[in-house]
Length: 257
Image (cartoon, one colour):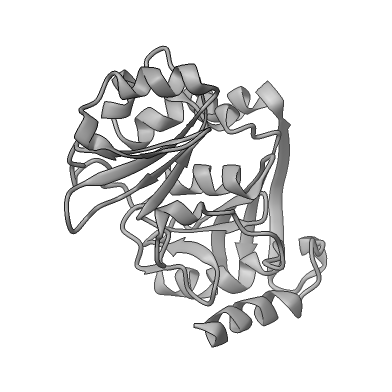
């Protein structure tokens, strides 16, 4: 496992951060756009609210041609590695490869997604060809460094790798309801700072670690669930069972959006 992590770091360390792609052989930047704040609405139509709940403050979108293949690269910048992981965690489905070489990443038929520090990165290759997939990692290395802070996962979750597909992070009611639909009603009127959701694929018993704004909101959550569903409480959190079973057909798209 340590060798894998070292391999990832070395691969990214050897290539300077934020190289100008126009100067790199085999890379053509056809179009580049930058969106900030509510400017996301002009790019994403109705999908911006979820991103803004996580605090996305900048999106750089590039249409690229790399070694003869077309790619669409999006780099979202967020307040923290946890927020970057949160957006990533809601868009990961059916990974062909997950969390390799010490990275938090997910490769699917048409997309490579990754978390790098406070950035969520999506690289889409519309052809879905084996060539495009094989070159996706080397293309990302021209724009992104992995030598950055990783999200701080609470010890109480006691989660083992891979994180991708098993752990999700929410910042508010909208993202929490995307994590698991039953949380929408549970958190109605509840003010939260953060929520970690751990999938129980083997036991069909999901768990949620919720950080409400205060003790009043902790009590409100406790009043809405059976006592046996409360696993642990602390000064600023409540750890609970989430009994709703996730549908495997919830998202069948090979893309992460």
